[in-house]
Amino acid sequence: MTQLNWGILGPGIIAKEFANAIIDVNGKIAAVGARNLEKAQRFANEYNIDRVYGSYEDLLNDDDLDIIYIATPHTFHYEWIMESLKRNKHVLCEKSITVNGGQLKEIVDLATEKNLIVAEAMTIYHMPIYKKLRNILDSGQLGKLNMIQVSHGSYKEPDPSNRFFNPDLAGGAMLDIGTYALSLSRYFLSGQPNEVLTTVKKFETGVDEQVGILLKNEANEMAVISLTLRAIMPKNVIIAGEKGFILVEDYQRPTKATITFTEDGHVEVIEEGEAEKAFQYEVEAMNNYVLNKNENHTLKLSVDVMNLIDEVRKQSGVSYSFE
Image (cartoon, rainbow, N blue to C red; front, side, top):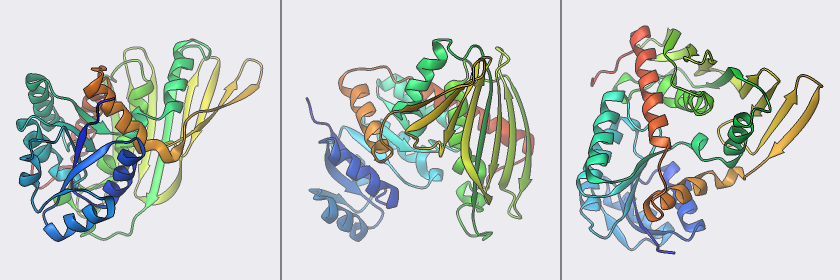
């Protein structure tokens, strides 16, 4: 199998996890770029990377790179995805892929024009258990899908300078944890919601610290989403059909789901995949998009999710200083 050359843009904590995943699937990290050469060199030393750059521009000007993995704060995603595409690089970018739908539309248009792959490093789209559950739903075993319920809560110290609460860094629950909940909902809904209702509690800086969202699509499938940065909540999902429901706990990187068939009370436990391989699944998917020309269905989901986030922000009056 042809080996693709990866370049890492933004060698932070999450990039270390991803670098290990590339290595574990026998990929090649050919270069790393940071705003600080010393930081890039430390990362290169840890992962035996040959080429080291002290700027993102120099990294992208490396003609020997096939794919750029972007792990900067999400306020910088749009800029560096666009610059990567302009230099004919495929891109895998951390979530949230952009901060609004307008940015993502420009990215999709340019990628389409240049016949390049862009994907969001969203675990929901790549965990094997979700693909298995999707097949179970599609088979009709649970009847018509009626309701999805997602809860996701974590406690962040209320510091206005912290990235979670800083509007200059597109802080707030929606772009941090909401991307997971909305991606999960959109993955299982048969179509994009055409009705969105939301209520938001804002932090003193104006970003969303708690969010409640209700979605409904033309098939009358609904999703109820609860998000908070101010309280620890179980990260659980319930997917309910006419004949039964699925429970997924710790839904970001799950390997197990419990299915309850309500007509007879039968309970079945489904297991698939490994949590520690979450990033490997993303690397393998990207390899298949580029090398095997597999269609990237996930980008459309990312577009739908970003448009939903835009609508939630519009209804709640949440804006960022740079927009």
